[in-house]
Image (cartoon, rainbow over all chains, first blue to last red; front, side, top):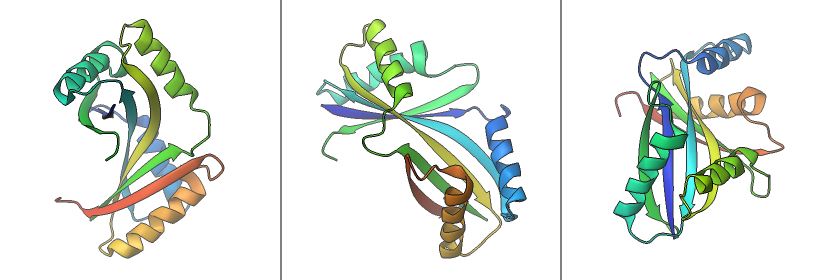
Length: 84
Length: 84
């Protein structure tokens, strides 16, 4: 069993409305030291697979087919053993 | 300038419908080795602040007031220098 951790973030230059809204809300709550907020998603996938390289290739395929939007997203994949 | 990275995940035992839906969709796409999916959010906050401990306390306050729902969410905070 392996655990893949995929971080999906917006590409540089793509507007992040959720981040902008959080920043505004934090300023309204007097967190005036905040000068930027960005939001990304983290997807953890448990896999019945022992080969880390094969797992990483499969997760890359998952990202391209379902998890990420190649027009606006960048993603990074980490694969680790379940007990780590 | 410091960068705080906040991971907000669902507490153990709280149903994760988004994760379940991704898992189903991956199975439909023939990624049958997938045996579990969970989704969390990652919020990066840039702060005009030099003191890491103070920054961590402020971010904890932000989580309690705005970013996380204490009923269903757990969160972890990491603070690092901007150049790291």
